[in-house]
Length: 149
Length: 149
Length: 149
Length: 149
Image 1 (cartoon, rainbow over the protein chains, first blue to last red):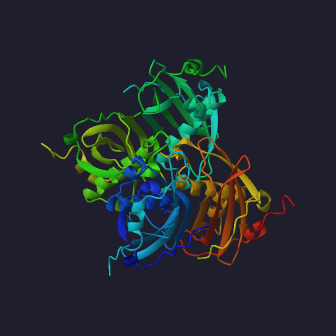
Image 2: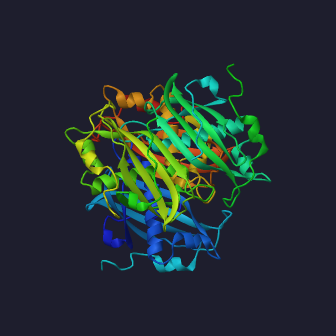
């Protein structure tokens, strides 16, 4: 288990904020957003962060040294449920970069009320799923980027 | 619009029956199975029919003349909702085979009560998404297969 | 089968346009957006249209005469696949309003290239799933709203 | 963070084994089962375990003291990817029962090759999402049930 990042509850500790509006399709019979919908939210937020930093994930995959960032581990802590039509801010940051893996931390809130925190651990893999060299640009994305300071 | 197949309400008109148990993840805040879950049910049922006939879809895709059966059209008519833990029988049959397309009809019932009917229209495509030759085995799968008669 | 609306390929025939960015989670092993992802796109677009018209779906459901718009029928025609990171414009319009049902037409394009058209048929139901009176506001939303003319 | 259970790699440490066949709809453009599909697999497996023990989840929810088992935390470790048409055995066990929460451990394998391990933490909640009394039957389900010993 590589997962070590502890996501904070302070949005200023994060590099990037992405907005997601929950879909009715993502609710369940408990009347809340099903927990199985969160991995797609987290993925959308980290793709938006990469895109904002100038590295759209489609380009990362299609490039000469094209890599995928396979998900090795996923952890989500649900603090309060999300509901249909919630405007969810997903704060994202990268940390724990090693030669083969990196970790992404997430804070989800709605109108400044914390709903969930999460961590994903990723490894670079090539098109056949074999470990690949971590793209150099990732080292420039580690940490909160100093925003909010 | 190629879709012309009229799915009947008589299970004996179908070639194959596949059983799906609904998941809680597939419910929505109306307390029923969300309509967006049905395409995956239909796909699972037609893959099971192909597999039962000796042509697992993974093999069809991976073969020397590997093709995918792209979904060109989808139609679902919801007659009564499905609910969590329903044991759904999905009756499947192929019809309307042409040189480039075929149609699949579906009848969904729970304890002999009709819940939905559906039709999908498919075209054979190669790995790049271009139209490809329809595999010869499909002509042997057209119709109800005579079961129930 | 009530479905009768014929969605046109002209965006100016539609009332409202909603933007969806495809998610990696919505792709499949053919490298395209899986057809099972479209119902959620359509639903998000029609909820956005209602919200834009002053009738957020959450309010419609929670109101004194709270109703759900159950999906009775769904038809999608795939003309060209969607891919990861596509910015999809979903054009939406309501037509075919009766005392118990209405139809919604959709045109999906990416950079002005048509990808799909779709129709859904809806009935008003109460919290127990029984047919309910169609909310009066719907009659004001029928047609293209005259935009583009 | 309540999550403390360490899922082992030995199937005999688990109480119940549930079989899931992966769907094409659950694949992604990397050609593997998308990590966002796993929460639904885990949920299906724990519902099957409850059902097998005589407590179908639908009954648990609908009973006089009806409760839901809200997901408080989720952890998944992906060791090797799942692919389309894999027959996945999901081994399940309950541990860490307290007055308000319990933990479920999972081991996923295909043909005896480990693919993933996972843990979920659950709290009993009533229909309004408020903490509720843990059903008494859960204490009888803790541990491996002695099978395999």
